[in-house]
Figure 1: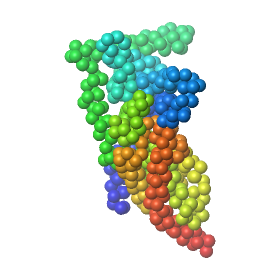
Figure 2: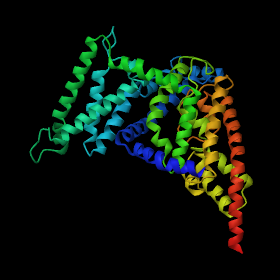
Figure 3: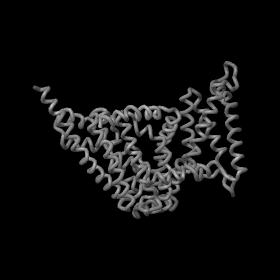
Figure 4: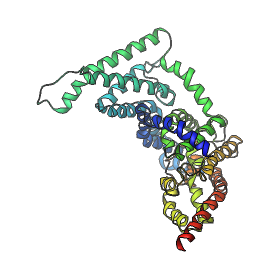
Length: 428
């Protein structure tokens, strides 16, 4: 074990640390974080529209009329339906700010560049909504990064129009962005023309060659296990594994939940094989119970078997935050970080829960995930909502939680016994 940890410390941790601080990946992560409230809002709107209770549906029709779902549909249109547009603004803004360049101007230019690159519908000539949602996510990332890099490079090279002193700041800033914006627009307009003359689009090429295969791969158990393993190995060394791998996971798993929500909205059964099994809520709700490592189960294991003053006090202090999936107090208070004993269940438990959840859902015992709930939503409530209002989602959470507690107990006992010996020695 010591040699393995030394190997990871020497080769894995420095590499992961560089990835976690790389400005482009940080901008992608923060871009997704910025739009998360809108995504959650759109998810809840769809969930409210599609709750599978006949009495509820009849009541809503009676009160608001046959078109009562239009309200939720319009909310979805302003969130999930334009996911790639929203993400482009967030990414561009954060990347430009990292260069200390005007973030608002960069985001507006990127938004325009992405509109330029978006194909139009064949019949009506309007922008194709199909590419504005999760299906256009990869193109959104590419355009956001390239557009912002061109924009900030030109700004930093002073390729701008200088306004005289006394001109309002907002006016001077808009004129400073004029020449860089012109270059960005011309570049992407030429690129779009090249693809148009070739009879295709960047969206089509990226979706067919990269995004679609990756999305299909993401719905496999091995890929989910790999993500669970990497996230928790990073956390063991004190690195925020969820944030470091966040840009990759958001890009791969958000399209899956978006498709599930859209299918659920159109009336597809939550147990249907048409829906993806592994999505972002799959990890948030069924695997990370109490946060990374399912540490809410660790807290309960402490309550069940710990007798030392050290661990009983840690359990009492960390329990309230753990209910809302905030587990930094546990990770650094127990601690789990750099703890060679507790790292075993900390890494093992999520892998086991990934497997139990995958098989329960793929076998049709539990509904597919059809809502994106806030990561801080307490268990039971989140299981009910994410499964479209079915009790099986709650049952899977309870089962996973019991498994996690059972796996943590032996290791907590070992740690607690050591703490008790130290406590008695100190008292003597």
